[in-house]
Length: 549
Image 1 (cartoon, rainbow, N blue to C red):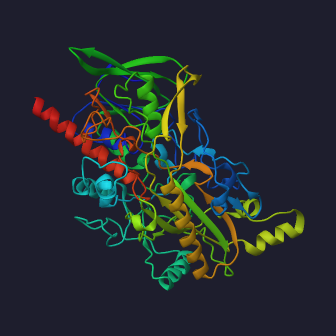
Image 2: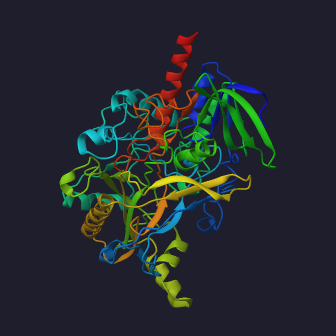
Image 3: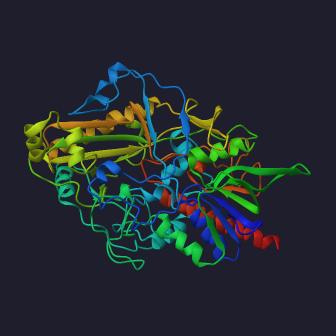
């Protein structure tokens, strides 16, 4: 429960959009309250990687927020090569419609960085100008140069390990940590890339390659998605949250679900008065704030705004962008143990900048990975069929032989893809839940076809033989990176927030998560950009307050 009746700023959400913002304001003397809908996890005791059943247990979600899905997209039988399948089960989606599998979201202090794979990417400069350069999505009201110093600051705080440079992303200073060495499996892929004239370079990751932040380096268990029990992954709970609390001016209340933002209108101007939230027992509370910052993610943020009556121009929830994803797994004649190392230790950036000559207008990246082959249970359930001694011997024979190439690419906004609320479906507090609807456009489908062809070429060049699994966004919505439902822009008629991330409609309301992205980037992981935008928004707010008095 909040200790005070009024705060200088209330921040809703403690992930990569909320925590950096809260820290910056608190470090400059403001009294900040952070409302987090989920619990605070203890890395040393709450994660399952030290248990025998770690594969089956997964991330220990203590709280999940309810949401529903909209209409399903019809699938083209002529695109059979894009359908998801594996050697053990055959086709994973037997229907003729795209299936909603999951929106992968963590509710807790640190948000979805608790189970992210540590990737820390700067957006390609062209991602900020998709409308101008390629006639799709929308231009950002800021550019790469304006974010560059914030990228550098975030990299220093979380401890990013990276190479000397990443193509087309100029830097003002080196990465704070050297890159991770490529795993044995990735070295095999590197040789294959050289055969094909491709460059595979070390990934930029918020995973410690040497001691940093009074923390030991990574032990290469590949278990980032289960939660890091060593604190060497730069998730928000072990980076920005401790900094915010150290100021003595940031209060974090857990299990505090924000139900609505109270807004009042005086002299034709709307202002947020504060936030109504519910504690773990369901009791309702109201706390006042001079400013409110919403950082609940591109699904829950529009839900909260719509339930609060904040959607004057009708754009909240529109321009939703999901994850375009492809994965292919094959057996290699050599045992490579691809599950050893960090989840994604290297990247092929060749197609990250959009090239319409390829037949689609977005960029993407490819990377070697263990994919689904993270342990013996995965091998048994995905790649082998049968029972008894023969089955066990088959799993033992091929364990460690799987090698995979994954791809993530640009999703372009379309009218059939959005987030709204389902008025007749309520959560435990009686509030309408989020409704997610997503449809792939022709550009995304063509990109998936291109990804599939290139990925299989790389695996073949590596010496891999039988393909044993493919998983694709074509027939499954399985989104990790989501964006765009509160687009930033200069024009209040076509955007929800300005370049300072302040709402056009409610001027003391800010939105500091990936909801504000006008484009999704060419497969770049978003957390670093979210954190950089959050710090920039806090600085602009502090600057405006200084001018006012």
